[in-house]
Length: 512
Image (cartoon, rainbow, N blue to C red; front, top):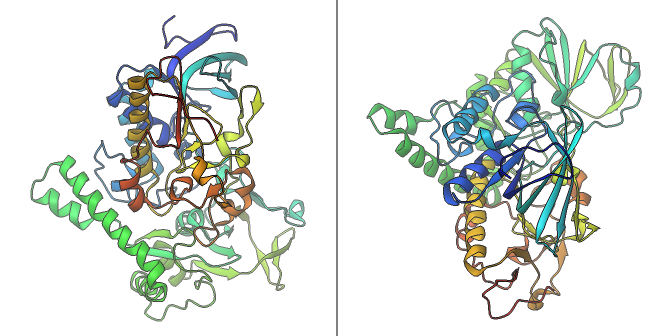
């Protein structure tokens, strides 16, 4: 059977060497690295949606854009040409070019919702059952290796608090994740509940035509204001440097600057806060901009995600009187809006909940190993990509303090090196295990609260794997450390256990 041939019944399975889950920014980048570095490997991508794009296809709210610069959010292998902060449409166009230029489209199976993934140590194969949404047929794929690129949140069910009296509200209520582009908000009073990256994006766009926008937040967020251009890139283009070189140099400069800034958020947070305030004053055009109480967060910068604000657009709207902020919690909804806990009533024609995500570990698919369902919270995570007790699987989870895609590229190299190493030693199975010397290490939450603690993470920790107190058993979210550690991983270290009839190691390590 042709490895790329589709199937029409569960009994007829398509086999590939590698199955990639998800055709978003992670899945497309991973597919590129696989066919570039392991050209002999067959693969297929399964995607629930009817098109590629992942999060950039899910979100349709006004002004949806990146909150990372595209010189580092773009893949390392394809230069980004344009403004650093890009719209969803521009990002989708860029991804479409990657797919077309590299022949990735023929490997994607759209409209396939995975139902189960089952690994057998008897065969060292994954059996993946998916529902083909066009006709409801169950189709089966088998693969040697499963590359999970489905992201970290539920694309269909956003987080929505159980607010008292919400059914009483007579206006239009919508979560930003479920926004319908056909909604007409011109001239309307809009209440946006939330103050994170989504609110920072949608509020200035609403403010262009709405009667007024109110941002209701439980607590303030840090914003980083900057021009939406890169002077180094513009200068290099002006003097005739080629785009691949510009891409490489500008990426290096941005990552260096981000490293310095992140460290300063820890070493001198008070100084950083004052610098952020000065940027707000400059971009808003108001030297006396009032930060208390609505723009004075209670945590240090980067303990939660820093919302990027191109041209200081949200603060320009505040200074112009088009946007106001209220810092409070909701007591109850009314027919006309909400009443806060302090008794203030906010009337609105449209209420938009920008209240964040529901964490989803492996898209909440049923995953089993040798007939036993995997509870991810019972596993220990190796460097944020592999799990104890789960063979032949790598999970792509990107960065929050740096661009997500930096880790897509890095793990693309890692997986390809791992697959080539397995071929070299004749292994059909690899899994990670805690070495005997580390068996007594302290187990911790996947991400510690003092490291990164947005609401969607703290709400979802019960779904996530555990971490150890050793560097290799933590998902440290530190690109600047991992860019040296992961490429130099010793694939024959005790954490990796290989098995198979042809393994050329002297002996197979016992699983701890």
